[in-house]
Picture 1: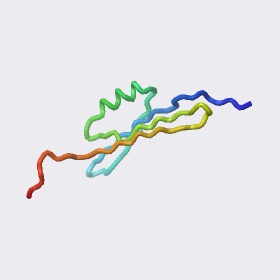
Picture 2 (picture 1 turned 180 degrees about the vertical axis):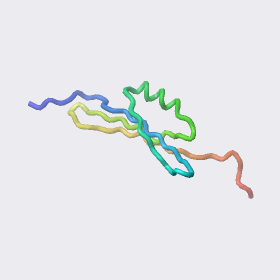
Picture 3 (picture 1 turned 45 degrees about the vertical axis):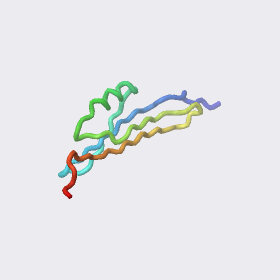
Picture 4 (picture 1 turned 90 degrees about the horizontal axis):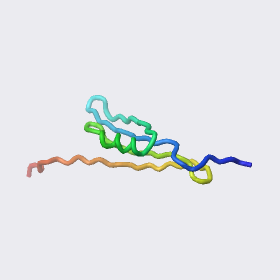
Length: 84
């Protein structure tokens, strides 16, 4: 008889991206124990760091590993119009 793990979340990752003109692009992943702590961490992200993606890993009811990835795109908006 096969015993499956119960369904649920096994890992929550917040991937932060930073662009530095000298060092280039870097990404750092931070693990969180629950969604509340992830939410709190997201609210504290400040420039020059950007939220790149959130990955939630777990198992479904049949024991299959599943990953939900939420990817974000950042856009730079300049407050002044280009010269005409």
